[in-house]
Image 1 (spheres, rainbow, N blue to C red):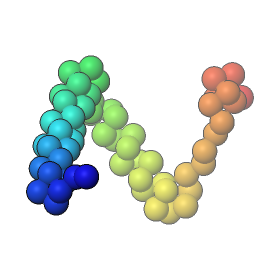
Image 2: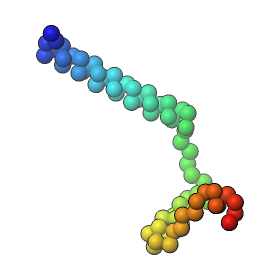
Image 3: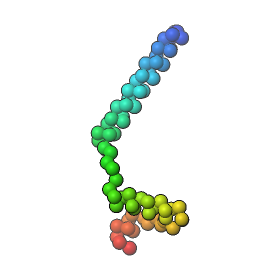
Image 4: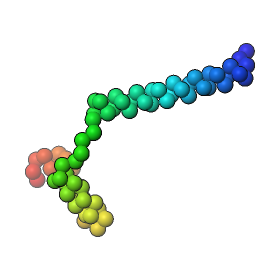
Length: 70
């Protein structure tokens, strides 16, 4: 049977392992995906979208329809 001290040790080991795995996930994401600053036109488009959304004038178009140009 497992003693209380052993359970605490296991809990500590698991907590440390979780921290290491989280750190590795962040590193992998950063290296594979990377972080880039948005371009000026992307910033403008985002602000326009936010304003339209706030004013409830934003319209979502299905991507298939948008790709056809209709």
